Amino acid sequence: MANDLSSPLGNRALAALALVTVLIGSGPAHTQDVRQVMPGPASSGERITATEQSEVERFCSNIADAARDRRYALQADELKKLQADVDQRIAALEEKRNEYETWLTRRELFLARAEENLVQIYSRMKPDAAAERLAELNVELASAILMKLDARKASVILNEMESKSAAELTRVMASASRREDPS
Image (cartoon, rainbow, N blue to C red; front, top):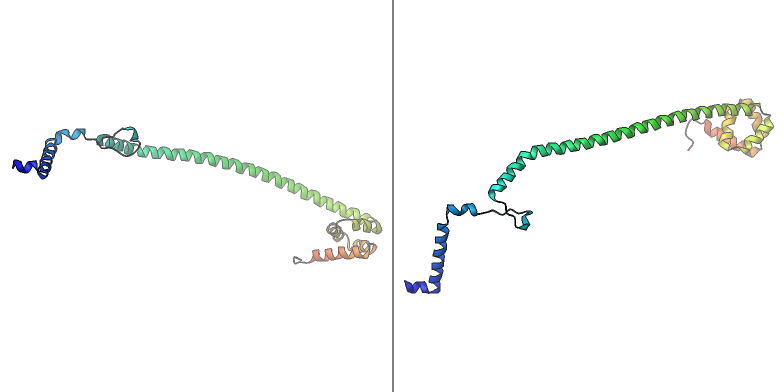
């Protein structure tokens, strides 16, 4: 048998037997020294044992609800700030809208008064002078003034105008008096 152990196969068998003996001999008494290495930031040689891992897991599970609640509270605070900013901007826009509506109402009143005054001015002018002035104005404005004048006064003014200007004003007044959109 000594002959068998000196052969290469025998040396292997002897080494395997010695390994099994060492493994069996180091049973449960040495398991406390075994450490499990966790993947992650422990690249500097730190090792986390199974016991430490279970403590970390318990800690994380214990604070998960509190962390979630804190995250929700922070998000709610941010939403409240954003809502306050939106409300402030809406209030500023409402104020500007009210200012604009007030200005627009004043402008429309002014334009209506100015238009009435303008019509009264042209109605009191001599027809030849009114015809001369209206011929120099914008066609739409001149035709609007003529439409607001008394029909007899407007006809006398148109009679005093050059035929080309009178025809242009008549065309604009006719298209403006249509019920349908001319375009």
